[in-house]
Image (cartoon, rainbow, N blue to C red; front, top):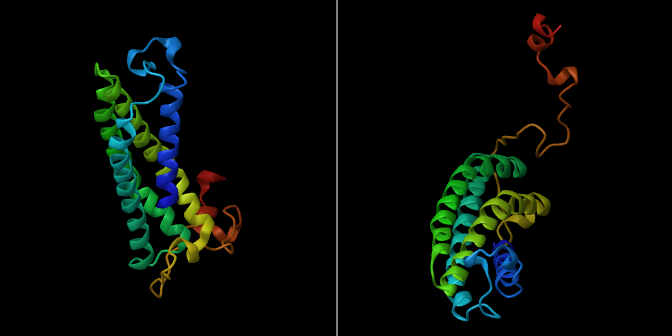
Amino acid sequence: SIVSITFTLAVSFGLAVLVYQDGIFNAYHIRSLMSVDPELSWLVPIMSFSIMAGLALDYDIFLVTRIYELRWFKGYGHESSIAVGLDETGGIITSAGMIMALSFGSLLASQSPALDQWAFLVTTAVLVDTFVVRTILVPAFMAWTGPTWSWYPRQVTTTTTTTRLYGLDDDSDPPMDSPSAMSSEFLNDPRLL
């Protein structure tokens, strides 16, 4: 959680500095994305930090809790629980992120430069967290660290039966084109001959 939230904050603050201090969009003459002062307003990072960290933590808890439930209560293997958890929560996180980005992004129509900066910063954080961090970085990091470090310091044990998705959690699954992976009905289907 700390790594993913820090990444979201770093990318958002970095983009805000590029836009409002370095003026990378000044050539396009979009009023809400132009740098009017030589720096960000001092109040913008203070106001936006708690909202950005709260939203990132909310999405993180939602995804990781679902993965934990699948692993602990339903008996999925480590990588299978990550894949199914991402599938089950992805639509909700994406919808919530789009709604939040739309509502915060609408503030870019403001006449106040500080409010424009705040809206850009929070909208960027929501979009990065929704489409990059929760869908790519968190599942990849959890799969890469394995079952021991993904839940440190607590050890997660599964139920006695483990549900595995094909190609995940077990390298002994036969490849799809081998006869042992296909049913006899599939092999004898006249439509496929």
